[in-house]
Image (cartoon, rainbow, N blue to C red; front, side):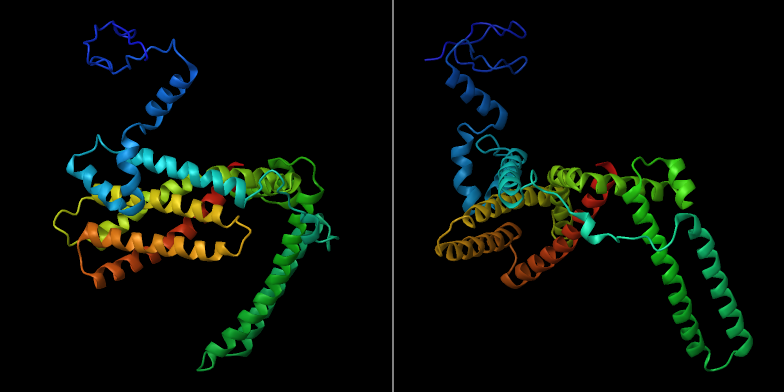
Length: 352
């Protein structure tokens, strides 16, 4: 049996016989001059709060996650793992599986040479002169059309022809511009603001930044950028949780007690359950036998059924309204997932 200290080593409070934590500062009474396994167990308990709480949380989490939300909102919190801790555990489980099974980030490398032009059509020093020449051609074309045609009922058709011709000339200039930028990124060893301005005539800070990052991306073959994207995935996932709570607040705006915290906690438990189920499905996909297709179907069907029942029991509405609102929330969430991923990629591109 583990020995207990008589006084708190942090604030010197004298413990009562039944006290396991200091009432003054909250420090554990445990004596760590003991066996290693005991220390590991205490550390896990303190870090994740999953000692006796896990026993009460395990079954509801996999069968009726909304029950944990209801218990927390009703004030019965000490018997269950905290929602944030539960989400973090599920998130760590999913990300570990995702990073080590789905993606092999250590062997990732892009062969960009296949997709870049082999030769440059025009020297860099000619690019500004050619753009000016193309612009003059466009201006002459527009003036000639205006002088030949008067404003009449056919003006719309004439303007369409002008747009087609103008776009054709401008697209050629843009194409040459892009090729020269690619060539610059490919052939230049070190890139700084002055070099970009002298070679390409670009002074805008964000364009300069993007060219620098593109050059770094090319030299690194996308490895560092890819690793940055993977590292930022947890942040992107965490952004989705409060967003989903916001959709729910709007969808259930007619509820009497429509507090955001209710929807947020529901969203936390929903995402925790979803991450754990999706992580499990990734593991099932590794099974080499044909049974994995049936197992994936069962897991996906079970996840769908539990989520539907979660909405039905927590918000206490009819099946028709529940299905419609779940469909709307899922549709909005799918769109937001796309934008969050896109935002995460752009941010990663700027900071990698």
